[in-house]
Length: 423
Image 1 (cartoon, one colour):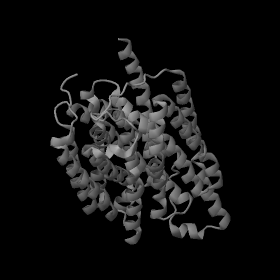
Image 2 (cartoon, one colour; image 1 turned 135 degrees about the vertical axis):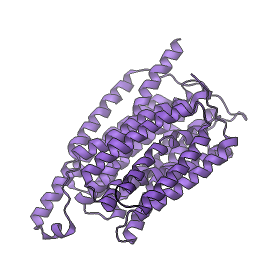
Image 3 (tube, one colour; image 1 turned 45 degrees about the vertical axis):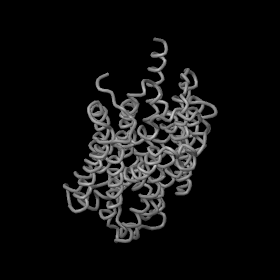
Image 4 (tube, one colour; image 1 turned 90 degrees about the vertical axis):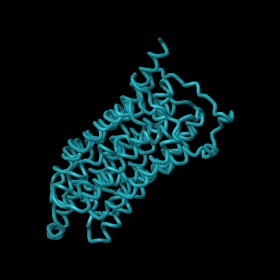
């Protein structure tokens, strides 16, 4: 009984962390158009916001996994929270200097902290209960990740975006003093939200320092090996998960990052309205999709649901690319509902049955989300090469979902994860 209670407390506390990295990722669709204005950037340059975050994941995932392997789950969480807090506070001097490179550095530090949290929390959640319910339990925890996904654009749209959108001609007509005053004002709106973010994370850090988290007794793999090494790639289902996660995160980031630009291009929607639509409709759908997906996994194989959802997103993106006006925007906003289950399902399928090696496997799967650094830049380049046509750039996530659909189909018979029916 005591063990179950400690697992429940741990589950609740660790699930709270899912909000933090959701906020980091889902504030990017706000930061990209905002810093594009404040720092006068091209689409390709603004996509480096995503690159800074996801290269942070790429570079820090292995050290985070090693740290977790050596020092345990709790200490890894504390390090992650410290880095996240420091990164948030770095936004204040970055805004004062209106330095794009400083902003990118702050995002990198926050991403390093989020990498520790995500590398640790995902496998830890799968171990807080019976193995048969691992995918369902991780999807449940990720459902609260969806809360951060819809709150971030709403907060960003209200407190970061000014709603002032000057044309290039209007900017050229401004005097040097007027232009610098306007740009400084735009950069300055970012300060207060990140002071609040840093302070909230500081409180969470103190709470984690005070509570006791249960360490999990890991089972060894069948060959008795449990060292932290690249030998984990000998498992085919893990290798495929790394590839699938690379393409999935690229698709997820690309779909959201340019939504405000997409809405402006296809139906001339203002930035504040687009941010509100993305947060209150698309990201609420993302959160709802997590809960619906968790329920459906009582009756359908995770791999089957993954493949079907990917095919639906291919169809939705095709409509978004070929349509104009509200039809294109509505199709785009439906995509997150069907993206919702993908990350946790791929993750659970990838680490299933790996025992102690799930720690290094978790690092590599988190590391694979460097796709989020690469594909948005490719989208920005496609847009810039076609005269700012951001709509055509959505071919990139469409291709990514095709890879995910194929992955799900290949895992139908191979996947070891079993989903329990009932409680």
